[in-house]
Image (cartoon, rainbow, N blue to C red; front, top):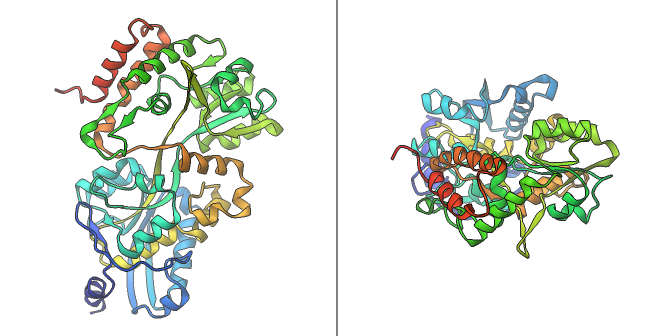
Length: 429
């Protein structure tokens, strides 16, 4: 009986605003948002609910060695809601595997699970995720960077997940080689030491064209028909810049994995990468460990700030969950202040909850601060449109052609136009 009352009560009294992907969300009056989804007073007034929730996360998030983040936070959540008696069923599923496991059998899937924002379209096409609306959408908009929220926004304008962490990149560098002034400009850095950027990888070479005004699916990133556009006068000039860059003896095109090995050997002094190699780089550089946003470049007298991609790991709620109120409150809690603090302290997980980012503990972590600055100020959301998959192979090929000398200043415009065409085609037409 309580299950039926919950479903009706949410629709009529709370206007929960959890609609399946592709549908309009409801609306409710916004209210001030605490760090946890429900305050003590609100929790005391909640209707009694007894339920079982399936929750999925990667094995590391359930490992006692890392503080059993998932189990710990779920039990804390249970304790914060005295009128709710929740039994949790835990399952192992990585963010990248969630697409396959959830869509393979939606009814058997977890009520709450982690997923990569780059797979958002697949979930939305199958109407597998609940859309956030009302006070829950207000909370997400209030506590996270707009860039992160946009990464979890579909073309219908709906937001379909709670941000958990970021996925972008910046620059590690040797402070004994580069000054704080040097690191603002790639050109200045190349006068002092060796810098590595993986030019034959679209994840990294796109930052040059995005800096020069290139776009993925329009200025706002939501215009599918606009496709990927790098070709312009500025784009051609940037291509010519990359031709010169590839010939610079202080430039190295290497994967971050190879670049860090070269840094250990002393043959690379700076490289572009994300948080995943922070600890190893710090170990190599010691007191000379430096981290900064990726720099600008000067092309024909114009300065362009390079702009990396950003995506998000999100917490999603299954659209068919029997307990939407409990599930969405749990998702918000897992992405909230207390949970992000525990995740950071036990696993070194990069937080993205604004109030936690503002604490002295996090302000003292230069890697997190650079990551946060990058996401909020220069990163471009990597959208989930499936057409994005067409980009990677042409981008790799274009980078290789620049490195091999096949792209020249004489044919740069022609080659960039061909790159644009390939990046906007599945290759099957």
